[in-house]
Image (cartoon, rainbow, N blue to C red; front, top):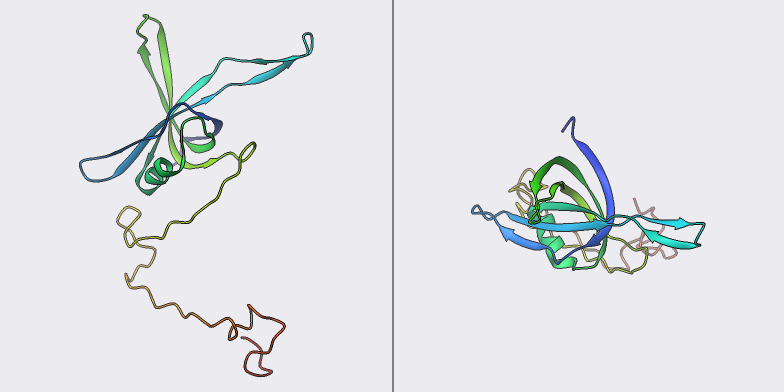
Length: 166
């Protein structure tokens, strides 16, 4: 949507993502991401941590379920989304504060200091907002060729003669 502020943040999860469902059955996940800037102090030759910035993030539908099943407290993440207007509130000690909120468009584990194994979920009919990728609602049966019949999979072998594979 026009006029929205899109941002990308990198930080660590403060707690495990909280997965809930609306009365209509729509999945929603809430999580907090903390990002602490580090700078090198040349006078002391040491790294110094700045003030941590906390961002409350929300994801919906299939993305919400994937986040809850994949990410855990302490995980370093890269989050992209739409920044919402900050909301002001008063802390328990009387201090005035504001919270940053982000509606997640995409999120992933940071591979800077970790490895990950990605597993694609099978898409279900109507999985994303009741919408299927196939507008006709019927999926044609996929042709599964035997490895020896597939000229593209075995380019050095002739599959059924000298004909081109297309």
